[in-house]
Image (cartoon, rainbow, N blue to C red):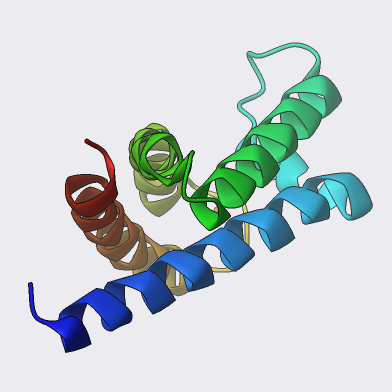
Length: 127
């Protein structure tokens, strides 16, 4: 990989780390926002939201440190894949978790972009 590509993917890794840390913190400061994403058949919704927030923060922090960036990239990919069914479900739901069906249709391809970015980061940093 040439030096421009290396710099580009380092910047993307940092942006994703910040995105994950910010999102994880939001699980604690705006719990109600995430509640519709947790299916009703699951119990302990707030605990699930908090645990996923901790996981997001941990993944974000791992991406920032050389010793753990590979595991962070792998964790990011796994998390993006785990979240995919939530976004698919939202597209076909009578009442999308956030906003309209149009918003759900926009979020789904964005999730695929995040999966692609995560896959690339994993291929670069997970050895």
